[in-house]
Image 1 (spheres, rainbow, N blue to C red):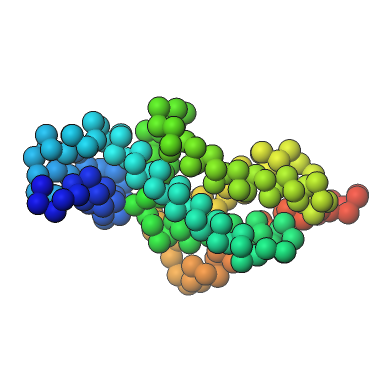
Image 2: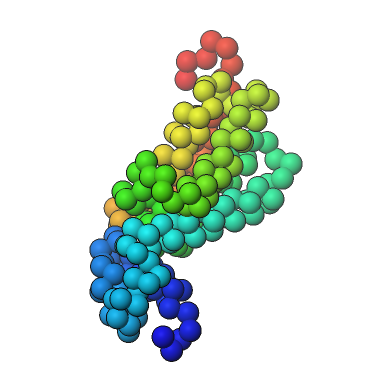
Length: 201
């Protein structure tokens, strides 16, 4: 392979295909042809399409964690709710800027899959960034007192759902994406707030 890095070329071409098609709708044979090599050469780097997607997904979670870390650094010293809003914003922004990685990260192939430990570890690390903030906020009395893991999952679900609606073209302007994202984060923040005893709103 004349370029000297066939594995990386396969990964980048696969990401482009996912972005263009809005799904992982390709075969290793098709991918190899797009790169300009035989499918046998491609299989020397990835034994299956699933293995290739796991590589892309792992990269994606590492990239998302980098955005999370940057957000936490920017908001160091702020209260937990502000830091959680920052993670939510970073999450949606990453999904919109890296749709190929993002779709691979949550591909149905990896439902309850433990055979790609690096990908699983990277995914758990990003969720733990949110979960640890939720636990801290509850312990400090900053957040509504609910079980931390389900609460963190609910937050994740909200930003994940909005991300996919944007990527699949189901949200149209006006209003612009920024206004919708800000509104979601505002309402999430309001829902996390510790309510006075006896409050029903």
